[in-house]
Image (tube, rainbow, N blue to C red; front, top):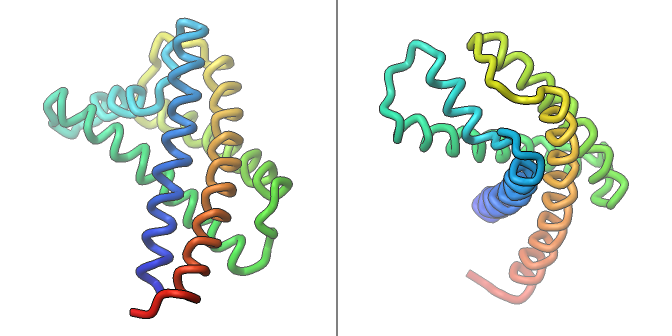
Length: 160
């Protein structure tokens, strides 16, 4: 049972984080700004006292980005399992707004802690980040719902 839940959460996190990242990369291209979270994370890592090669920093930037996505999905899962919110389009929007605010506050802290001031339009970055998190939450909710249905059907018709 727990194995299926972990697989479900990993798949949802990969899908939702990928959708969010695609949106951020598209906005970055469209506005000719650096709105790419994995790249910004690798730059922030460079500002710490951790010694890593450039390739390792880039890899860690991506890995951290997806781990954070997994943590958000775990939070959503708890909200849904504890019936705090139903699995619905409205809850997806609510979770996206909450996640967007958390994301913006987290980036403000990251930039302050690392003393990293990339040459970006911060207002534009935070606006696109807010909408990226709504896309994340909507995608996570849809994938979670689809996978929940598939896993329920599998458990009902497949014996192990």
